[in-house]
Image (cartoon, rainbow, N blue to C red):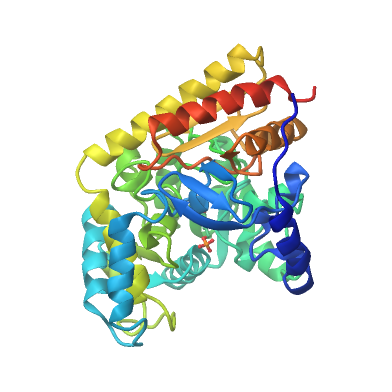
Length: 432
Ligand SMILES: *Cc1c(COP(=O)(O)O)cnc(C)c1O
């Protein structure tokens, strides 16, 4: 049975939007082109649910692509933000919350003694790279195919995420000289890392320790340790981009889970609790190179914005102790098990479910996915068909095979069950 979605108001808004906004959106993956439809315009969210402008309710597994680990409009976060707004929205002078947040982050993340806040993960990644170049006196970067570090010129090569979704390998407008200083190797390929680090002197090896922008692809046993060892052996810095994994896969992020501590850590998403905030940090010795303590320039009018800091602090407070992570892990497991059952009940075998606390991807692939080539080899038409089937049944999943699902502390058992029944029905109608 094909179910369809009421979307007259979204369609009307989209028709206006395309006149003034490229593609009708302010960030490409929102456009839903890769699943063959136009975007749905949202008007409100509560916990694990969102409502579009046509009043369709959806169980939301996108959760703003990562920041909303406590779900939509959590009362404590809304209160923190509105209280902060009452006192003024920006000063261009330091505020107490920034010190509190820096302390909270450094208490949690093993590799961060000192940090600098920015307004986006892109800015934080760009600034961490600048610092690594200043500290090493080198230019070249090693990155992994399918890893996304924001839309920084030098980091767009084979960048997964929205580029993969739109079928864009890199971007026009990036100078060839800039692209040439980035070497890209396959994820989970130790020989390629060894060969590249023998052939080039890198300022930094840059990795998402739990890559989640080609779908979720776990690091192979020993791979993160190899990155640490190769960085140490060759004088490169190791940068972990924990914009997604930070405060999510565990309290202290992937570095706490794996015990592999990077020189610099890039953070975003959860750290801003749904408002624009991000940060980069590392040892005090390295971070002391940043102006005005040191000579590496980096600045931002709204960096450490009081509203964003309040949302970040309220979010981290809700993540205190072990309980929230046990709960998030349980929700993620229930979702993963439910989706596997749904596929089984529909007789659909060609899938791989990868999950870790707070993250999940369902690949339409007969083989386990260990790198970007594997992710690109998935049956994207099947994913698109399944995803449309989910939407029609009130489940909002990432409109791309290359993005992760974001279980939150707000998702209820009932919402997981609703997702699983929708998934079973959607599997049954996947065109194959
Ligand atoms: C989202 C993301 C970024 C970019 O963050 P923005 O705030 O969108 O600029 C960087 N790295 C990773 C791993 C991300 O997932």
